[in-house]
Image (cartoon, rainbow, N blue to C red):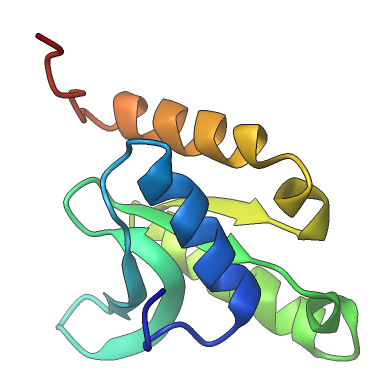
Amino acid sequence: MDGRAQSVPESVVRHVIVTGGLPAPEPQLPIRAQYGRVVAHADLGYEEWKILIEYEGRQHSEGDQFGRDIERYSRMAAAGWLVLRFSSGHLARPYLILDRVRQALLSRGWLPPLRV
């Protein structure tokens, strides 16, 4: 677990990724605008491969939050980031989290370590 996580589910997602043999994503990864100003923080991410991992709790579907999230993810994608979104249903099937993060890493040029 990492003290930078803002929720227990974020920590669980990171734990699934790390114990599954994938590189450790950085918690609260800062997302910078064109001139370097931080415009958002992703729950987890890989700056090297421009992959972001977001855990969506129930609060993301309430009120204005949904619209703010859409705007935020749209800006991230326009800047070249691949955004993976997970929810409580994925926590019950951690193999899905692991598989999707692995596929995303491979699609962005990550090479798994050679097994001897």
